[in-house]
Length: 227
Image 1 (spheres, rainbow, N blue to C red):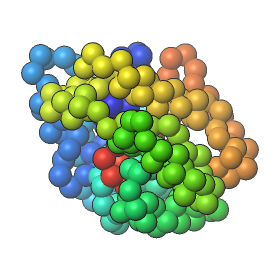
Image 2 (image 1 turned 180 degrees about the vertical axis):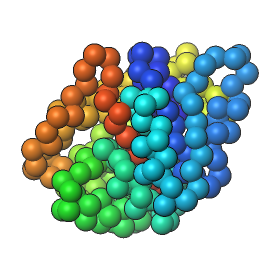
Image 3 (image 1 turned 90 degrees about the horizontal axis):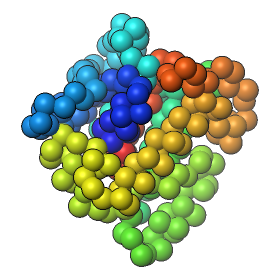
Image 4 (image 1 turned 120 degrees about the horizontal axis):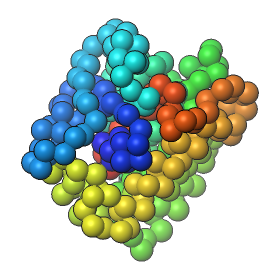
C-alpha cells in the first residue's frame, strides 16, 4: 500500500490487486477518513482469475501492485506468473527466512522458462541500531537475488495502515525516506531491468512519459513489510 500510494503521489496511476485472504488492502482503503483519492483496490481470490483480471484492468492503470498476503499458497504461483517484479519482504527472524526458499524456487523456475520476473528481497521491520539487518542480508545472499534496504520497525507504519495512509504521510521523515527509497528501486528496476537477477537481456521495460507501462509488481509475499 505504501508503494502504491507513493507512486500515486508521483503522478502515476496505480491499482492494487488484493490477493490476501484477509482483504488487507481493501480494509486499508476503507480506513481513509478524509476523502482523499486513493488507488483503486480490486480483490482477487482465485489464482485462475488473476492474470485475466490484470489484463482486463490494463487500460486503467500504469502499475499494478499485487498484494500476495503473508502465507505461501496456490495463488502465489499465479502472482509470480503475472508480475514483472516480485518483492519478498523478510523480517530479520528465522521464521521469516526459512520459508523464503520456497518462494525463490517458484521465482527462479519461472525465470528459467520466461526470463521473468525480476525479484528482490526487502528487509522489513528491522530494529534500528541493531545488526540484525546486516545478519539477514548475509543469510539471504545465498539465494543470489538483490537485497534492498527496506523498513525499520516504526510506529508510523502501523498508524498509517489504520488510517488508510502511506507512512510517508505520517510526518515521520525516516519512514518517508524508506518508502521513497523502495519506490525508487521499483521504478529503477522496471526501467532498466536488474541483470543480477538472471543475467538476461530484459528488453524494453522503460519508464517513459510519467508511466511505468502497465507493469505489475507483487509484494507482501512472505510477511508484513510496510512496503
